[in-house]
Image 1: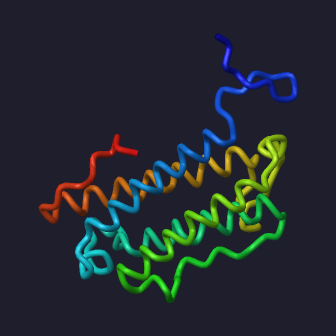
Image 2: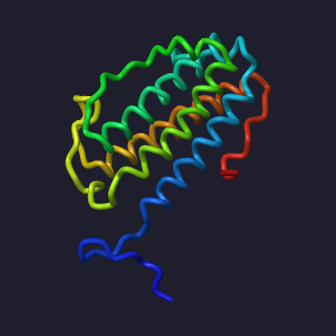
Length: 164
């Protein structure tokens, strides 16, 4: 059975809904990594000159919803990585959950044809909407991997990466 979706005369390998589901799977896993961190180490522990994981999570929060909001509505926002509400583990988890719901809301406003359009994300990073979204996902995976290293060096077993 042919399950490909036809878009503008081209076969699509993955639908917009499937891409969002994939990303939200990663977000769920990243949330479990945040939960695994002790409060103090979330904001203070680092290795090899890398930032604490709490700072990396603030970057992820600063990218996901503002980035999708720009894609959906066209309004460019500055990239703000220091979030006052994210100074505690409970605060960062609350923001993460709020961002998950907002991501779904704004994603629904992005028509399929928009993924091939050019964008200057945050007024700085040029690419297509699709390449920008893939960067958002790749960046999250990259920072989550750093969090895995931190957890392992702290003697904490991280969540299984395949459980998304």
